[in-house]
Image 1 (cartoon, one colour):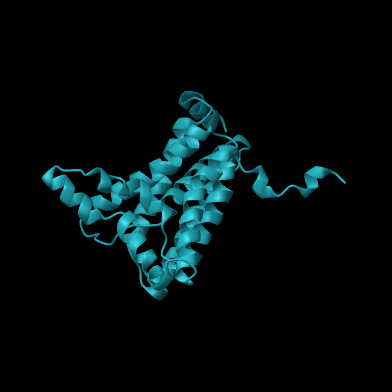
Image 2 (image 1 turned 180 degrees about the vertical axis):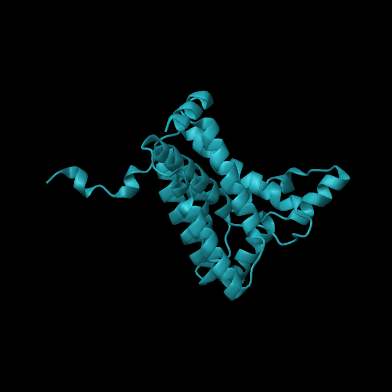
Length: 228
């Protein structure tokens, strides 16, 4: 029997994929154990709330810092840290599964540096757009804006591949269309929030960054798509 048949798909993930996912996994491992009382004693159940207060991104806080012109390091870390903490174990698992699957595909084409830039660029950019909407006051947390950035990069790769075979390029956007439909359904049933603002922004940023990091030059890629 070929030894490769015994290899787990997880063993084939590029190191950058694990590097991006491990903060989420580690955070959820600690908070999950605290939720069920295995760590933290009687106060363990409050660890998740404390983590959200410490690491979640606050648009109101960012606006206030901008107005007074003061940017403490302890608060400026939030655009980078909010992706690691989630509201529940289920929420975190879904984010990690999407992150591992999509990042693997993106990392097979782009360099580790480009993959990390897409991930954090989508997360930071999504938070920035979230802050620019003055009616939004809820904190932002979870890896989904960054995951949507990976969806944007994956969509770009699919878009180029469809163009190369002369297929309909709009089909590349079916995944994001399906996710938006699911979000709309959940918003109707359970009540909506404005996190989608950061997520869609993350998608657009991920798509554009993937375009910029494409192994093909912009001019060559444009000519290639036009020929198709």
